[in-house]
Image (cartoon, rainbow, N blue to C red; front, side, top):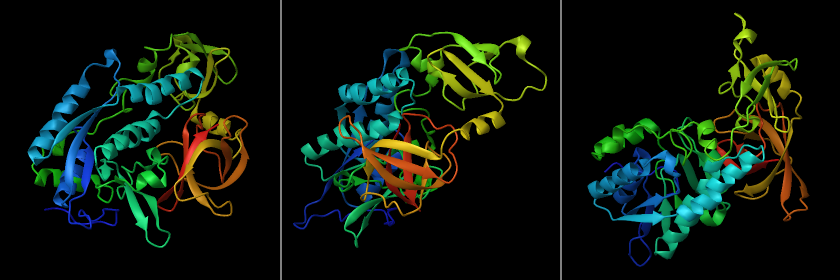
Amino acid sequence: MFWNKPKNYIPNPKNEDGTIKKVFVGVSGGVDSSVSLALLKDAGFDVTGVFIKVYHPDFLGCDWRDERLDALAVCQKLDVPFLDLDLEKEYKQDVFDYMIDTYKKGETPNPDVFCNKYVKFGGFLDFALKQGADFVATGHYSQNIFNTKTKSFEMRKGNDFNKDQTYFLYTMPQEKLAKVLFPIGAYPKSRVRKMAEKHDLFTAGKKDSQGLCFVGKVKMKDFLQEFIDKNPGDVLNEKGEVIGSHDGAIFYTKGERHGFEIFPKAKTPDMPKLYVISRDQENNTITVGAKHLLEESNKEYSNEILITDTNWITGEPDEHETYEGRVRYRGELIPCSVKFTRVGRRCGQRKYTVTFTKPHNAVAKGQSLVLYKGNQCIGGGIIL
């Protein structure tokens, strides 16, 4: 038994009438979900492992079948029931199509945020509750803590800050947090692997999955080119001179330094690493330059960023408070303030202005801006 109850929200496994609470655990075939399943069983819950089948384009191969077999093997090892849940339709519509459409508009989406919102804590949570489960659990490095003073749930960073995944979970409202458990959020990754070893789980030494939730090991540019036609264009230097070529401005984001070609005649012995400074999708060109030019280009942006489609986990932010914000996963946390700006004309969306003490690097429309107060994630929104 390796369950040392952390501060992370883990309720009493028994109901008042003595019956055992049911938890459906999303099992992916990896070590994090495996240990989450083991910990909840050790704690006394009635657990069921659920493998979520999502949409996979044919050209990506059949890796999901191997992951399913690994998830099934873990459930058999721990002697818990195993279920399949087909959410291909939901995934295709709310995650996959959204991503492609956003790239076509010249913006940079964050599909992992939408995967959590609509699939793991959308379709999966709805399915579990309809099946009589009291909670769902996942292997996310996040902490769900119940504040007894405010009578509300707070999302805190995972104790392993290098693995913290709250950036992808900021869309969780109170009613969903009340039904969600993050069993490993209070532990470092190294300990999670040791717990897997003690439970004799073969996933203890399994490598972490890389890349987006449905892209896998395929490079994003190669992935997009399966759905968006190439449109070769010119690579420009800061003087506007043509120095290379690219496959289409749509495939590049500010700050990238790979995937474009520099003509041999334009190269010099002292040429520094080149970064995408800007792109002009209308003229299908990208401008590249040295890192200091990228940094200078960021100074052209205001310290203010407008966001919409917001979710505030424990209520509206205080415009007099100082928070910290990041515009990409593991991006730098920069002090900022938040102020309600207006209600948009379309769909009545509320918009907020986030003012930073200094500009963020490589801000991209469509990405998520997530805000923190210390270790607490207060919410966030989509950059306009």
